[in-house]
Length: 450
Image 1 (cartoon, helix red, strand yellow):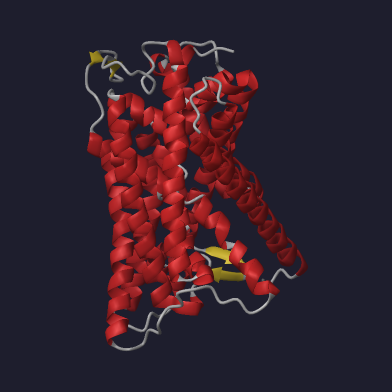
Image 2 (cartoon, rainbow, N blue to C red):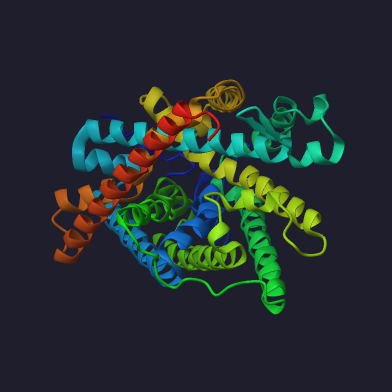
């Protein structure tokens, strides 16, 4: 098994040394900033899943929902701490190298496949969502207008293919060509800010309606009435368990920091920031829409909110969300490109030093994502299954398996107990997600109007 990127002193995302190539061919001693690293890690965490949290809180109640988010933030911190501690023991500069150290070449291959399935699937889904928000979508013969269609009507430059082509050429591609993840710190900060914009608008509308007395008290506990309601509780598990997965970018961010001791403060700050945004978004979203909260709360902003300027606020929410996903795109793409290159060209020189290969892989991946999002309508159904499995593997199953395997004899009893908990939660949530997705697809085929 080759670890050429881990051993190469010129690999941008892998160096712990201060000497890095800045992408211009000259050597630079610059290191990533602490604040920029927090924003990049937070942007990796906060993606489309944030819109499903209010519905999850509707299912489990406020108390259980808040407790679950806090517990999973703690569990994520544990899994990341295990990754970094075992990486230092193995002298592994990447997650793939660590998997190789624990499980050999099969571990490295399994990791690469999981990242490719997870990240490619996420990016395709993000592009599909952006197209839905801006250009509308049709289902069961009914067309739901996008923001641009609502403003300018249906014409060629508000169609999905044209809008997404512009987004690809002027947003995705320019940001994807950065060779250091720290170069994305400003776009990541803006992505986090846009998530906060959604939170503030939701909170403002909620307080307005609270003062009007038009919001009922939220349920603090789940409403269990029969066997069906018990199963309904389980459906919240996949949303909550996968909410903090960011593990595939942690080594890259740590290596660019230059000082490994700074990574723990970055992780803690990111988890606190994201947990706060998650809790408040889930709480205000559930408060605002109550039992009418949809699985994707963004869909609730397609209707009259019963307040002044409702239509304007709806558009602001939807546009800010689409822009947020556009800015999350390059952070997820960064890891996708690196792992695809490591899988296809394990013996080649570092990607940052081979400009032709870097450009070829970047353009190729962006083109594939664009084509998949526009011309393969069933691809979302496929990624509902593969993505659910790959995500829990990267976030919990792989770190837990490394801890249990313990190739360097550093795992504590607490590590192994928590690892078993992580594997149980990951497998359970994955089984529930696959069953729910299969049931949903079956219902749609039986009754296309659903």
